[in-house]
View 1 (cartoon, rainbow, N blue to C red):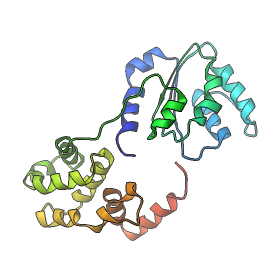
View 2: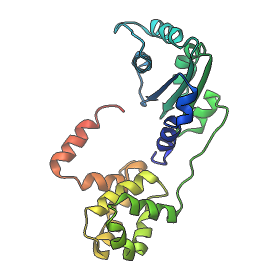
View 3: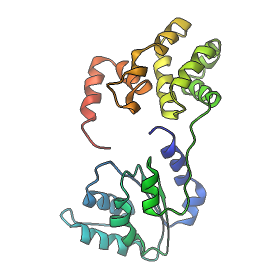
View 4: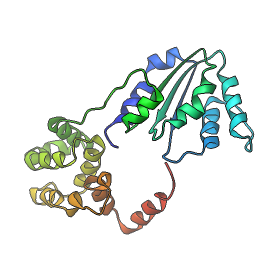
Length: 230
């Protein structure tokens, strides 16, 4: 994660051409574990369609199908982990729309193939130069001039972020809280968090450093929130 798939999808979703060509549009964030009824209720809620809380999946699907009749529909399914969310749950009820376009973001090529997407767009990793620009922009504007003399060590840190926009933005906030000195930036670069093997790969480096930099009371709050699904 963190490559910018969601950011790109948001730009498309909010584009005036999309808003002008579809009578209905909905954004759904699909968590790794998704209760079918809850997902359908979220769709209905975003479409302004009434439902009863204890209705089952079949009843909710029929309401969705009825609500989309004679409408054009643009749907974003963000963060799909399994193809079944489309194949077994959403595909049939949205077939009632006169026109429907579905944009799916996923980390997994297999999911995209099983869904049967017409076109695949792969989001590339950032180059080092683009990563440096993002690092500068993610810090306060007045700091861009201050950090220009730290470019060399800054580029090393950007490379350690692996071309991931999220990691660069997060580490920018960590650096923004430090003194703008080579000593402080080198300290961040040399943190053991970049190579901690007891952490999942996606949590090493920038993301763990941002957590480790929090005051104790916020760490407790963060860990509590982590119990809840997306």
